[in-house]
Image 1 (cartoon, helix red, strand yellow):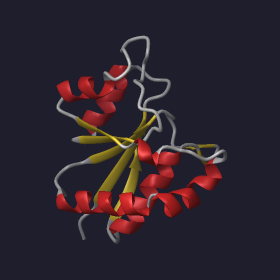
Image 2: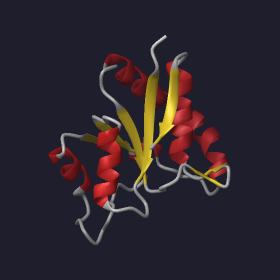
Image 3: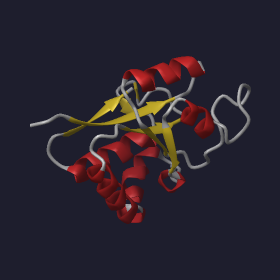
Image 4: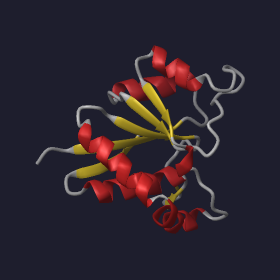
Length: 144
C-alpha cells in the first residue's frame, strides 16, 4: 500500500525563510490556508495579502479556505462544528485531493505547533483528521 500524506504547518514564531524551508523540504506544491481571516503572516515583513504571492514566487500555489476557520469559542467544539457546517466542502476537497494525487497538499494556520502538552493546539489538526478519515485507508497526517 502506498503511503499517502496530508501535511499541515503553522508559521508562528519562526522566520519566513525557516517556514519556506520546511515546505520545500517536504515537497509541498499547494498550501491551503485554513485561517478564518487570511491576513498575511509576518506583518512587519510583508503587507497583508502578500503571503500567497510570496509563496507563488517559490512555486507553491496557495488556496484560501477561510470557510474552515475556527469559529468556535472552544477548540474542543470545532470537530462537531466542522462536521455540521462544512461536510460538503470537506467532500469537495477530498475529490480534489484524489483527483491530483501527485500534488502534495499542506494545510496552513498560524499556530506553530499542532499539539501543545499533548493536546490539540490548532483547529487545522481537526481539519486534517477529518480529511484523512474521508480519504480512507493509507492516508496519514504529517505535522511540519
